[in-house]
Every structure is written in structure tokens, then in C-alpha cells.
Length: 606
Ligand code: AMP
Image (cartoon, rainbow, N blue to C red; front, side):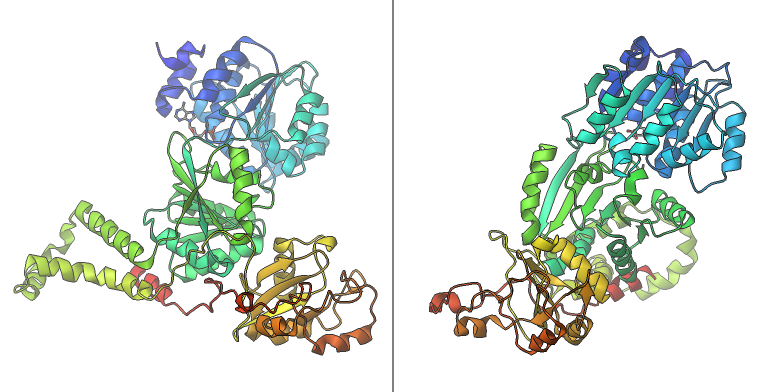
């Protein structure tokens, strides 16, 4: 007997499953479908996206509702418009043999009148985002007072996005005696709270471990200097010629920048973030689905609705603020039974976060090396050879073959192959032949710095006491100073002060900007620190008077003290020990050489 029929599904639904090509039920389907068909109980299911959870609640709902009635009986709430549309499409496919079925999507950014019309035609199932749903309820355009099944899909995401109040309000318009099915990838406190508040002794189903990512995903991390992040990203893309990936950045600004840089460098990339219009986002997603975009650079929020099954790699260009978010990111790959890789590019100061993530996902990361230039050349060459080997001959070239054959009359097959491959190889080789090793030796978790003529180290009188960690401070500096991605680096935050570097070219801009710069009524003081060797010779000097913070009420005149430079090490005791005097050299702290790979990539595509 068909495995889905064995779960208790009726023939017309089994037929739709066969049409879709599903052969065996996934774990979450096996666990929930019989349960939901046989009982009217509430359910909490912990399952990632990509596990087949839409079908797990979709099929039981389709079987249980009365298709002959035009009353709305099922409500599915989802966090984003993309997910809402995706669920609606899936439900329509699952119910394609249910005559008279009307599944309506309700989401923001589209005509509310059209949606209301569709509902009025008799939508047995409504799939909605909370904001638009609330709006339609308040305008009396929907009636959910008779629903029998409510699904809260990606509950953790909905709560992350601040929909708690909206969900509470929406559910207050639904009958008490309905069944509520909650699906969530993770189980933070807030989700347990929702389960307690809205559900009656729910049955709990867990697919894999709580908070654990898909078993089809392997996790890798690459330790690089903070300034080499982008170069590392490019190498990861180059060493995987068939990459089809989502690249996660922390901010909209970084997302846009990285995407722009990739495009400029000749990669097929696109940006997806909240500052784009809905229309722009739709265009990007359409290109990504059609695989015209190989690298989609996205923020966490914008990526929530991505429902593409064949993503080969997720690249964490930057780790998320909340490490729990990592589970969601890595869940974008390894879907629908396929395998995937989740890569993390980290600098030394972030590497400890890998351990915390390992605890959450209950899986170990593999530490990998950023490939060398020659390794990339080799991979690219082999990939090209395979591509040529598998290429079907286009006979449109036949009329020109005579001329070509004459040209190569005296060239042997071996020589021809060598020449042919050299065309492509030389481009990569020229770019990579002098490339440096991007891997940073692990060990110390603090970022070393060496002052040199190309870089300036600054002292700033704000620190962790003022709510900054290195990431926040870096964001703050880049945003206020209008600097580019990775223009601020070697950020080292202490209790009440911090240090950071910029290229010497930005020195004047930084000092100028922070002349009389006030935040919350307090002066923020930025000064140049001394170079380490001089500092060492001067010996320790104790912490600056006034105890740090925002400068503790110092007056404007104190600005004149800027001319005296700050020493990063004045908190240390004097160390005349010659062995510790030599400046620590960090391999990653070199001015970035110009690269012409961008030109190579671009011309390659012409
Ligand atoms: P979901 O977790 O609901 O987002 O589903 C992920 C993808 O898996 C969707 O494209 C589904 O169409 C597909 N899918 C769901 N159930 C199965 C199954 N039993 N076998 C194969 N693919 C499935």
C-alpha cells in the first residue's frame, strides 16, 4: 500500500502526493499526519523548514475541512509574505483534486480589496501574515469566528518579528474549541509561553533534536583576518564553481555592499533586504529561483521566506547577533533530502561563538582552510574540462569549422587542448599567482595589532559599560563616519574605552568627525594611540585619569588634549623585557593589494 495512504490519507490526497512525486513520508509527516487525522488535540511540532512540515499540517487540514462549505475553517499564520505565498501554493498543489477548494493568501503589500473579494468567494482556508490579517479583521473583511484549525507556522520567527500581540489579537477572534497546531524550528521561552497561553495540553512532536539543524547539513568554519572576509568569500565561491548559495550579513548596509561588490567583481549576485521595495525583492527572488543569481546576499529577516530547495551552500559572511538564528540560516540548505554545507567566515575574536553554536545544533564544526590560489585554479580548470566534456555540440558552428580547422591544421590535439585550457586558466592564474594565504593561525582569541604607516589606531572613550561590544562599536563607527565595509577593523572593546583601526587615509576624517561630537549630551573623545614600540619604551602609564566612560563630564576645553596620543597599553605594567618588546605581527594585517580578478571575471563573462 502507498506509504501516505497508510498514514490515513484519502485517495484524492494520495493522488496529489503521487503527482508531486513524493515517494515516502518525511519524519515530521510520519509523526504528525496520523495524529492530526485521528485526534482533535493541539500540537506543538519542532521541525525545521525543509522537513516537509507544510504537508504535515496541510494534508490533515485538507482532509478534515468540509469542502462543500464556503465557511472559513482553517487559518494558517506565517511570518512573511514569501512564506505565506509559498504555503498557499503548496496547499493548492496538495488540494488539487479537492473540487471546490479555495485557499486564499492574505499578506501586506498587495490589494486588500482583491484579497477580500477572494475571501468572500468562500475561502475554506486562509493563509495569512499577522499584520494584514489584523487589518482585515478590523475592517470586517474576514470572519474567522468559525475556524476549526489554526496553524502557527514558524512560530519562533513570528515572535522574533514582534508579532506576539497581533497573534494574541487574531486568536481572540477564533473559537475556543478549535485545534491549534504550532510549528517552530526552535523552542525559545516565548514559544513555550505561546503554547501555554493558547493551547490545551498539546501533544509534542520533535523531529531531530530541539533547535538542531538538519542532519543533511555539514558545518564548516574558516578563520580569517577581519579585513580578508570579502576576499575569503570570493575564494569560497571560486572553489565551488557550481555554488548556489545564500550569503548572510548582519545589516542591510553590509548586505547591499557585499552584493554590489560581488556584482562588480563579475559574480552573479543579488541583494535581498528590507530597504528594497516589495517589487525589487520579488525580482531578485525570481532571478534566484531561476538560478540566474548564484549568490543571494541577504539579511536574516529578508531571507525568512526563501523556499528554494537546491541551495548548495549557506555562507555566514558574518555571524548573527543571536546565535540561535544560525539554525535558521543553515536550514536554508540541506532541504528536501538533499545535502548542503553551512560555512562560517570568522575572525579570531568571533571564534568562541562557534563553540556556542555547536552546543545549540549538537553538531561539530569542521575547521577548514580557505583554499590557496593554486587550489582554486585547479578546481576551476577541472570544472571547465568537465563542462566541455559534457557540452552538446551546437551544429550552428558547422559553417565556420573549415576556417577554424585550417587555422589549427598544424597543431596537434595535445597542443590544442593545452592552448584551449590556457585561455581560461591564465585568467585565474594571473589573479591568484601572487595571492596571499588568508588563513589566520588559531590560538589566541584576541586580535593582535601592529601599527604601521598605512593604518591608524584610535582610542575612543566608550566601552562595554556603555553597551558596546566590538560588533556594535564597529557598526556605530562605520555608520557615523560613513565608512565602507571593513574600513574599521581591529576593534577591541574594554570596560570603559576601546580601540579601533582605520586605514591612515581616513585619519583626518575620523579626527575631524569626532571634534566636539556629542552623544546623549556627552562628548565622545577619539584620539590616535601611539605605536606599540614607542609605547613599550615609555613603560606603563596607568589608566587615563577620569575613569573613562564618556569622558565623565569633561568640558570642551579638554578637547585640546587631543594632541597627546593615547597608548593602548598604558594599563599594563612597564615591560622592559626585551623578548616581549617585539611587536606582535598579525599575518592578516597587511594593506590589501589591488586585485584585478574583477576584470578577469567580467571579461570572462563577455
Ligand atoms: P517544507 O518543510 O514544507 O517547506 O517542505 C520542503 C520541500 O519538501 C517542499 O518543496 C515540499 O514540496 C517538499 N516535500 C514535502 N514532503 C515531501 C516528501 N514526503 N518527499 C519529498 N519532498 C517533500
